[in-house]
Image (cartoon, one colour):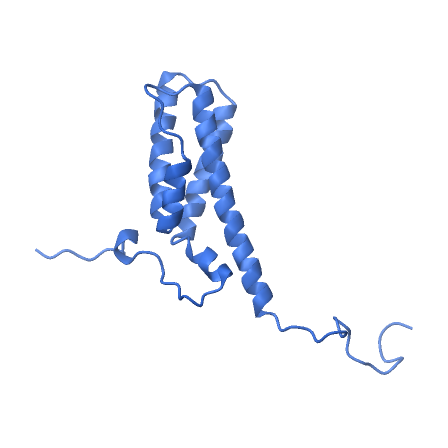
Length: 157
């Protein structure tokens, strides 16, 4: 019996190779190996934090939220380069013994949301730098002037 190969798993292909000559923007963008997955996880974590802030959490809900939080960290870790994964593991607090309180869960979720927002800001900065580097420089003193046009040929007086 033969098995059909599935899509490559992140650990099989690893993060994209970045040359030593890569710009800071390229390196920042390459730190996220699966951007769509990371966006989905980020949206889920944001929504969970919003929901958890708006209602009291009984013991079952706190246990479920803790489980989801831990699983989200694992999923996020699989979507980013090893250095970001290590940073995430260092910054996330150790799980408290027993069931975390509502406040502890909200802090844990808030910290994860903040970390994800920071990753996305890094990507945005990298993209902005890449776009700025792709624009042709304007010669000194010329700026963004319009081309010369004979007077009286436009729709305005």
